[in-house]
Image (tube, rainbow, N blue to C red):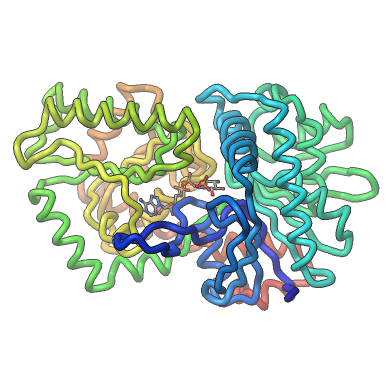
Length: 472
Ligand code: ADP
Ligand code: G6P
């Protein structure tokens, strides 16, 4: 078994299998914030990524991706149902997102979660060289730091949670709350998107485990675990370069023509997820059309909603509701050849996404709760000419960093409508000033800055950073 000095452990590998138009199996980059954040960072680094390739049955052997070794962990059909769709995405995901959907608790799901976490810990122990740095990602794998420390006390272990960490009164619902907290505390450093999350975690640890905890340090057994906020970001340089590529510029111009050359294009790009506020946004848009504030001839909405976690009941219900509403709005307000909403459920490659961002006069990112929301950052990075307006939910982690966006409360329908109108009607000077400030922020706080701050806190020797090339 080849071993690495840096091992990233995430439920999902950066590629998953999909079926090409000719029926062949092809590998493509998986949509989702975690992969978008880590993939550019590790490119051309001799690291190993331990993760699941998206199917069931024996783990496929995958080629290296951009120099990163893919180490696949197999999930059985039961694991998929009870670990991934069950405990991860029908217990923890809704609970961590303000319980916008009701979390479900089942003992069988918890058993699968433990079993799969154990498998990931063992796979990681096999591929980590002595003294390696291991970086465990996200809510699917909260037990891995503790399990891994038992197997390999020589490792330096980091954990990063990409999603929000909920307030104590919500987390306290979890039947196995103490085990989950203890699992995370196996890490040397626990990173969150926001300092509020680190605060929530410290409070819970003090209450549930009765150990001394501040928002920065927790004493557990004979160790000190550090915690803190490390807001994740994107590869801004890559996105800006994509957005200026001549073929992307041409594609954007063509897209605009294909949309009927409207005066303004509003764009939303989401995984089809109930946390993203898609229904609230559609309602706001439909009311603006009904009130006559927005006319289909002048303004179109492009809603990209790539299906996600499709066998989980709440996701199926959401998709049906969204599609019914899109159909209703188009039926009521569209004209022949002029739909009110262009609705797309396909995955796009990065260049196509960049072209869409270029076309969007207003980007509407209005989740009910989101750990960060990288789409918002990608849009800002793609607006190389400094134009465009970002409509952003207060409940996205990105709002703390991008206060120049038009901030809205997506639960407040009236506020959402007003916010969208303000973004559509912003003066070029005001929009330009807002966009400039947001772009300058992202320029300084890109994915490399994120990695630098997290990994330098995790690995004080600094050697890892030098190898990653993230220090420059
Ligand atoms: P989440 O992590 O909840 O999926 P984010 O906004 O943080 O939300 O990240 C979503 C990532 O997935 C972004 O990098 C975005 O570009 C990508 N993405 C979203 N929709 C698509 C799509 N249709 N095709 C390809 N990538 C997508
Ligand atoms: C969010 C989560 C990631 C996850 C992604 C896509 O970004 O934080 O851990 O990979 O959504 O979801 P999926 O269930 O397809 O992996």
